[in-house]
Image (cartoon, one colour):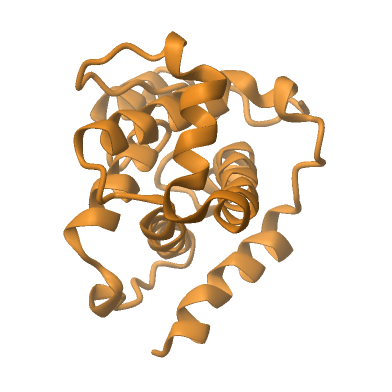
Length: 181
């Protein structure tokens, strides 16, 4: 797999789930805030986990999600490094029931979401994937404007005062994936 093939996951997720419209971020804030605060906490602790590494981390997270949906895990190990793995894991912790056992427990209480059913997973991942995709667009824009720390400089200024300076990661769960936001 080359870099272009690795990044094709962005287009596949767009085709599968669509795109969040610019300006709709407030509607998705309950899902976006834990994702972005987790990313900011990792960046604060490990500044080398920067915007460039975040773009890679998002692709890694999407490959993992695609594997849940298809049952096939693509070997992306040659694209992994400590900087992007930390960001990938912080991002997935915010919503992924296979990464975060608390998310899994919350979803197991809701009979509408069966983690063993591909259709149920497909519905569950729609909003989180759209949020992660929106973060990717933001990273690209702020990277162009502010370089390797552009996105994190923006997030720090935008919401940094609301994010505690600790290592506790947060998550959000949509218990009814049928709800249209």
